[in-house]
Length: 228
Ligand SMILES: [Zn+2]
Image 1 (cartoon, rainbow, N blue to C red):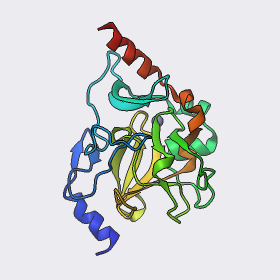
Image 2 (image 1 turned 45 degrees about the vertical axis):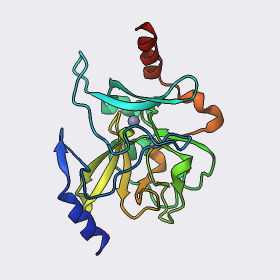
Image 3 (image 1 turned 30 degrees about the vertical axis):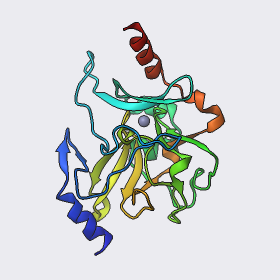
Image 4 (image 1 turned 90 degrees about the vertical axis):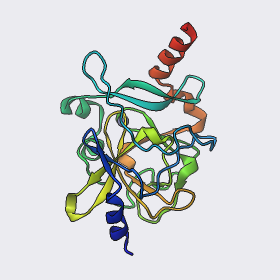
């Protein structure tokens, strides 16, 4: 059976949730693990969106973030990051915008993070949400940075992509919908998945500097908890 055929069979198990198609059954699910390799609570949930909204109407999402101690915490509910094209262009390079905000693809073997072997975290270049760790990076030979699982299942969304006459599954940042790349079911153990990601969609933080990824949402969440 070809990869396309097996992908087609997997389509039968997909369901539509708020306009996005999410894995439901027949394709392997990503297993979320934190940087220390521990399984996260929602192992079987990939990219499930929270449909609630905050008072301003901004959609909410539940994702995992780093706190000031450099620990991955959550999932914590927070507003999605929504900006206009003009606002994105103001904070991204033209290359980052073309790929992360306009679903582009960088040329293979050209990305700056392809051969990065340092220990650390790959976050969304748009909103700094942690997406992958060096623990799950592997050499795929495809020319793009490749990972066998996301840092937490809820941090990466899946969406069917029928562009260019192909049937693929696009992966997006769960907090800002930034385009990351695609996920394929020809990855290594233990997940069998290959998250094929553009370097331009990612920002790498060395493990020694992990506290720089501390997220405001983690602080307000722990403050709420301690006030109870
Ligand atoms: Zn993002």
